[in-house]
Amino acid sequence: MSVRLLHYSDLENAYDDPERVGRLAGLIDSLRDDTTLVAGTGDNTGPGVLALTEDGEQSLDFFEAVEPAADIPGNHDFDHGYDALRGLVESSPQIWLGANIELDGERFGSDVGMRPWTVIERAGHRIGVIGVTTPTTPSITPPAADLTVTDPVSAVANATATLRERGVDMIVVLAHLADDEQIALQCDVDVILGGHVHAERIRRLDDTLLTRPRAGGNTLYEIVLEDDGTASVNRHTVDDAPVARQVTEALRVRKRRAGLQTVVATVERPIERTEATTHRGESRIGNFVADAYRWYTDADIALQNAGGIRGGEPLAGGVTVADLIGIVPFEEPIVTAELTGAEIVNLCREASGQRIDIGEPDWWHAHLSGAEVVWDRTDESLVDVHVGGEPVDSTGEYTLATSAYLPVTDHEFPTLSEGHVVSEGPIQYDVLVEYARDVGIDPSIDGRIRWSDDRSESSDADSSDTDIPAADK
Image (cartoon, rainbow, N blue to C red; front, side, top):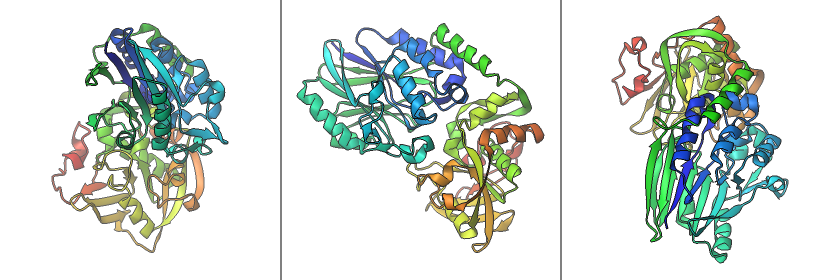
């Protein structure tokens, strides 16, 4: 008899849209039967507005309704600290796996039931399930800085050897990392359910099937594993799925209790905040965030990393405090740094997806205020940088406003370090709220990021009702 896997991942701020999570829970319930193994692959407790106010506990409404078989912690599941995650592991119905996560020389979470691997029986088959998390977690998630996250390939290889000795029929890896293809190439596993990277994927590499659903709770993958070793994948969306009312109502109660529905500004032209918007060049949402940072600090330049802006429904009509927190839902302050013009140029070079191993090669990772950049996508080179309307002075000194995250990680904009920071301000979403109240929300696209090999940017981009970045037109 065939085995079915239902795979979700990176729910993140989907909890801020109770109906979407309710539809995902309803979709899972409509598809599952006794042959089904439901599994998540990390970042399923946050980030998001409710994740901030509930320390990730809003995810329990979903977990208790769906009763997954297994899940793994992604980097953002550590956002609220070790004790908060331990509490979620202990309170949720699924088995949590982490074969390569250690703290103080011990496997993280072992005291609350976390395991490196488990064996689950479905349809007469013994399925070995292994969980691994990205080794970058300590450097990209400040609350997890004390973790040791070991090589996931070695962790899977060791667990696989043990599971094969125990006579499992197939091995499924839950992997929250960017390069899980290396597991497929080096380990004897049947399926890798992926997460962390938000781009969808269905592919076969040698004898291993790899899947990764879209982030944000919009998609669910159904993988059918036949007895003869063949497999098929069905992609489901939540658009027309039945709603699990108990999940939707529980999340709505949490939102009302949080008291974040105060309207602080009105948006006449809807502002998109999709992944395509934030990672393809200049965007109105990116300009809004960067402008707020520069307005508050009076810095020469402001920088917001594209990955720090979370996707969601467009900003439109009355914009609430919760809406603005949802754009950058992290408890991180903004900081002001001092850099030379030469270092500013290096930062701009580091915005290309060719220079960062997070996401896709054609992504652009910097949203700017006070600076204009021209980039040649043909040979992946920086053509020009202006600051305040003037060519950047390589020997000059400039102030830069950004989130406190970027100076402490070497995975994005490694030129910027903690040594450049000279002052610290409020939490970044508080700055957005203050800016919205005092200035309003009406960003435009004005040529801050341009491609030298694509002169199709139109001068009327600012007047468009769409949110397609000029670089994408």
